[in-house]
Length: 182
Image (cartoon, rainbow, N blue to C red):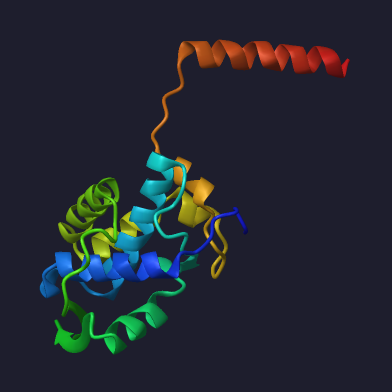
């Protein structure tokens, strides 16, 4: 679904590089990297009206995945900005992402760094399984497997409360619609 947001590859690279430099390798694997990117883009959309990177997130079994992450990691590794290595973790393969160079501090605005730091803290305080379960939110549930998750679905992250005024409006609107149907 095209929402008019342009994917910013350079910014995506900077964000992945920043995340790799902000997390200890034991805290960050591929699952968490996907989830940090997803939650950061969606929360940036909610906070500022536009996503952080404009990445396309695809519904997969274990939650949303960033379409361009694999190619971005290859590019960051070729540029010597991030080292990607694999090791065994509880009998399963785990990738580590380690920043090899410092990110240019002017690459990302302060409000985006703050948002990223908040998302990183939130995601890294949980296991990969816990964060995957949290990413199975309403936005993920409503998409078909393999389908893009539209940014407007971020509004489903925001809890809502139905007030008495809302109920009264709904009652009046129902009466109006029923009367106009007769």
